[in-house]
Length: 337
Image (cartoon, rainbow, N blue to C red; front, side, top):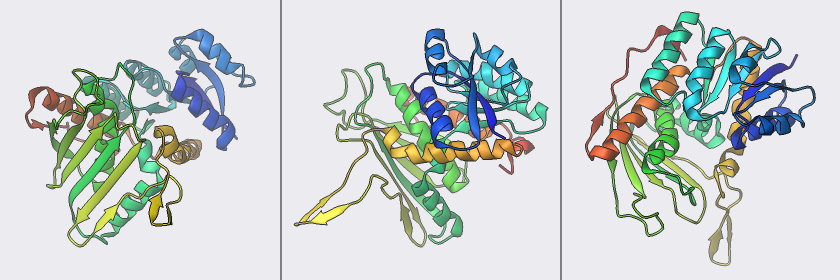
């Protein structure tokens, strides 16, 4: 039996996930959609046989035909829809952020704990990327010994004019925050944002690149270079130094060709090309898990921790100082996640 999914928010990423659920994966179908732009929702629904267009997210969640909810709307709306899905007892996949404030994330955690079971999965797709999973397996195996230092880089060819320095933290570095916690099984306890020489490609008054230094509870230091106007492509890098060796994130951009004294390969143009497979695996695993009882991926706790760390990063960007990260006590519901 297919999992009947309702989608709240049918902009670019919402439409891409609808395509994925409808044409790429197995075990799910989109039966309802809504969007702040109802004309756009109707246009999307025209290509989904039998799909209902709802006037609001709450109406969609209340629809008895909707078994699970996908939230890809504007970030500040996430809390409302995730809480409504929890209240309805429906599994909900929410693209990051879980919510835009620490307090909103805590309200979601409290609601889920009160419900007594996990209902929320947060869209941190890098955990599903084959290259990141290979790194995770090496770290978990102990092959390189205890991790000591992590080097990471997130480079965009360009960003829209409305992109701000805070967005570098909240929209870009947030992925490295989550992968750090996941790869190391360690919480982040402090953030320091450093400002290197400004790129000549940066917009006036825009600080690019940034270097974000993360400190974990066990003492690992993580440096994240965030550059969002590199021009040459979308480039994601990572390396973990352990006591006995290193593991490095491999490229997933196709073959590397060596010929006539040269080395050549492809650099992805954007995040969709680089992480397309990760998105596919992420959603297939979510569908499979929900059909048998619940999500197994990034939890509300993971979404909360990422938001709190990014808040500290934004504070450090403004202050120039090291900012501590203080998390609430972790509920038992998430301790085995």
